[in-house]
Length: 255
Image 1 (cartoon, rainbow, N blue to C red):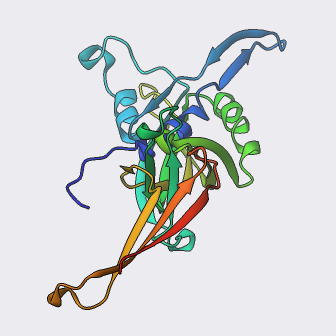
Image 2 (tube, rainbow, N blue to C red; image 1 turned 180 degrees about the vertical axis):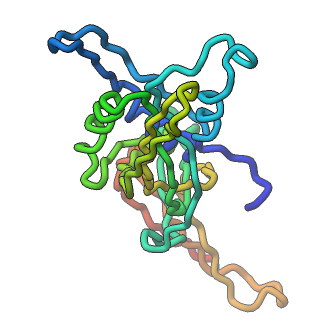
């Protein structure tokens, strides 16, 4: 219900998984003879593209002690869209029984079917020369055909691990150099992605039902009837989460 606090970090884990895909990209630079003279890891940051462009074009002495270095990779969330094509029956529940040795402490955790949402990301690659940008792009594109799947442990309390596809939708190119020799050049590749993720609701916890008892009466409750029979069903077994259980059934009669 609304107003009940819970936080499964479903969206946060998807964002982290997306960023980690591009966290170890590097480039090399060579001289005219083909000898490698420099190797550098491309920094990755979360934030809007306009923020980095602004830092690139402004006077570093006025606002920042160090100018923005290129190349650089950044990403941000663009939108969340409900995906009706992946909708499941909302009454289905995931169940898990705690594995404690004391049967009295065992609890059953349940969680309803998650809601499918598409998370739209924008990844941008900024470079000051064409070769740096191409090196980065070529380390990304071959892995998306057009999707790349990552396994995410979305709800640890329920042992839910899901394969989340990250789909590459488009690749754009932009050169911000306008011919002013005092303006820093920036080549920008913009890649649009969609993560087919899920958002999970709260986890509810209760002890497993191991005994059911039902009484039958000779008349309606308004006449204070006499109890006639009692049916009892008692579960048997170890009580583990993978136990199929057995049942003892008994009937008691009152005359």
